[in-house]
Length: 221
Image (tube, rainbow, N blue to C red):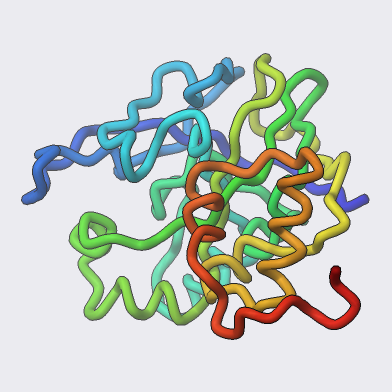
């Protein structure tokens, strides 16, 4: 299985005003020092201002890969420090944007996180970044990062190892979900859910929509 490292842990630095119904966003996250506890709704000391769209147990933690941040730094002509995209975890050696739904990561010795769904860029993100057409550009690049739920609680700190300890056979990634599932992927992910793989409410909502072609893949019963 793949292994990498935890480069930084990021928590809210300041709440930012927004024009939506919530009125504030916790997207402004900065790296912190020392160990941080992880519980069912994320990191101790962090804030989820809008749990309907960017929080709750199925979106407890948002992770972003340094490799994707480096790509954006070259694209934007400026640094992309940990937390710049509102992530809680900046990882290296782990492809968060193409993680498989249901894949589990062990961080350090105790914490286990499970990949749930892709990040969907929104207007608050665009306002925070101050870049033209940011939502469209971020989506088109496909470097979305991933949300995770907490399977086992504990403490983590920068420098901890990040190890992929299990990966479902269905092979459907968070990028696949964001881009739109093929009939084959829809079928495989549905079958995995029926067989007991945890699927977040966000993924179950996607699966309630029929794929572009409704027929099951060849060989399916």
